[in-house]
Length: 427
Ligand SMILES: *Cc1c(COP(=O)(O)O)cnc(C)c1O
Image 1 (cartoon, rainbow, N blue to C red):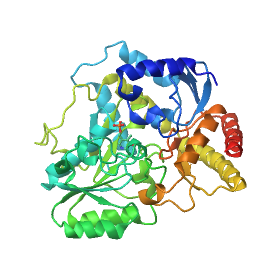
Image 2: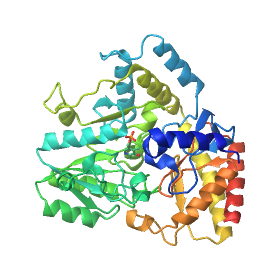
Image 3: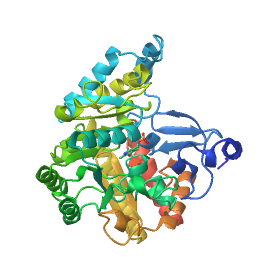
């Protein structure tokens, strides 16, 4: 594989940008080798600056559920752009996107647009704290909620593979209000809620965890969290920045029929543009400034171009059968992957929910961060590089999900299955 142009750009980038990248996991540190610089994408494919083409299962880390350069989305954006990029004043598009999200996620009674998933979770937690008048929150190890200080504790995603779950620059006092529980361990969460009775503002969770690989909720775990929150007057926040509009049209809350008080969104709702949003119960959301006293703002929030991309995307995913078709592709491919893994004799655990899927090289079932961490990351790195050589771009980390898009064709899937078999044989 030729990669002189990527290597040349990476060398230049490192002189100007920390680590040569604008988000850590892009640097390929946990899988070895240098990152590929991308020239373009179309449908299911990426083309790098050396002209190599790959079937892409990263999809910009989740947003591109319609694939790259989706024509109707591009057209929609172009017509909005022609009328101006940003006004810092309300536009109709913000109302349309807010209404569309409310229609698809009925738990959301009011919603506020922001510019990233990080802002969405940070603002949702501020709302929960302001509403309850309490300071502490419970988060689950291995769940990633963006890079706000007090959420960078045992955070999964890039923070896992960098071995820096507690980042320098985050004062101990800032994380003192963050309590940690284990995913799928309701007894642990219960103990914390009892020990800190009357002090916990919110429990925040990725209802389908996707930043330690894909870990679905077990049994009634989410429903039990709901009851626990009701019992103790705690605000339940679903961080659906990744799984919202990925695991199904109504997100994880629709799939598992559990109603959070607040939901954080991002990724798919921006269709590839920088967008986040948080919303939920009217009683809480009305406390947000200017209708209430909890301050939260953004110069570019509700940006018309971003709103247009989000609207075009959500209209497409609302078409009948959209998620059934994605699900069909995921089960076909993951069945092929399981067969190949079985044949290879390598122990593994593979999970898939909706259009998110992934596996670890591991000897046990993964149900939380602690088990996920026991996977073979060195072997994953080799696997990743073998897949690249065969023209398939998977996540450059053992602790990330793979994403199926509507643009992946059956021929793409067959090619991916072949590459997978070949990659396993080469390990
Ligand atoms: C990606 C992600 C975030 C952070 O979103 P950014 O847009 O990267 O700030 C938060 N929560 C979850 C679950 C995510 O997957």
